[in-house]
Length: 338
Picture 1 (cartoon, rainbow, N blue to C red):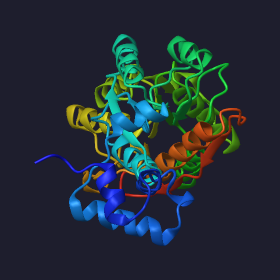
Picture 2: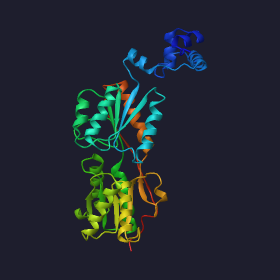
Picture 3: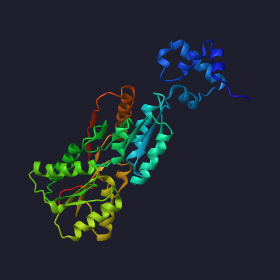
Picture 4: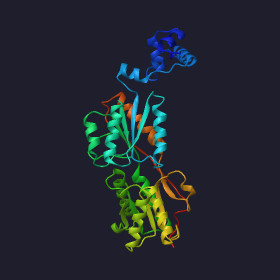
């Protein structure tokens, strides 16, 4: 049996093939009378017609695909972001190609070139470093991009992120209200805009709460990972620094603290209180459940997809950034100091 064709659909629906084509394409469907569009869709479904995206892209010079560049697919931060992106792209007639870079610049470049060879119409990028030559080159060559949770120094691109300043301010204020005065910060990588923004926000929040900002109580993590968080806390403890609470750059770094507590015989929150950042899944199942700054992951994905669609529709649109409000989720990992 031969596969049903567009002409078969048009004949069954009693319309011209061009009308059937417009009705079957979500991007052009509004151009067709609603009753006619329903008739065409029913006809296509009844005979099992499936549009050929390759043929369509050859005809229209548009692939209706978007590349999604993720640094670490094992990080629980990203699945809800991806879901938000897909929930916007799919009704608009777009599909997403997802690639994982493992935070490796060489792999990232290879994966991005692979996406471009598939004629993706734009990129949503979650891997940006503060200095990012690859994104600079892509921008100069006219590639449409939106940054997720990151920014690049000196590069004006649409971006979507949570308000890091507000989130860190909430974390520090919460600990200060509990009575903590010696608060440490396990900062994220300083080659990322997020790591820099949260470290800067921590310093400002300490001052705003009338606390001493002691540089000896800030340790940089090389990666956003549990192992790096554990290593940073070990370094802080071995230095002999006095502190009763930790604000971690993200939840994975905070989970690294839990590993060290078990190693060193420390109790959280009796010995040290901990606040994370991101609100990953299952933090309420930890022992103790982790207090953290919740960011709206799904909404970040939704807004980034909308920004990219806006950019594809109007390439001359001035780049705009969207900041989404975080919230503090208080659990049992924070308590007044002894």
